[in-house]
Image (cartoon, rainbow, N blue to C red; front, side, top):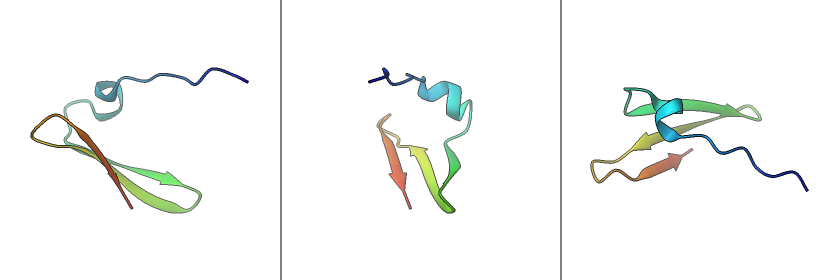
Length: 42
C-alpha cells in the first residue's frame, strides 16, 4: 500500500474561504469555517 499524500489546506485554499473540487463528474465544495474547521459538501 502506498502512503497517502499529505497536503496543507492553505496550499489548496490559499487566501480563499472555499474552493470547488470536481471528482468523477460531481462538484464538491471545500470550505473553511469561522472556527477554522473544514467542511466538504456536495
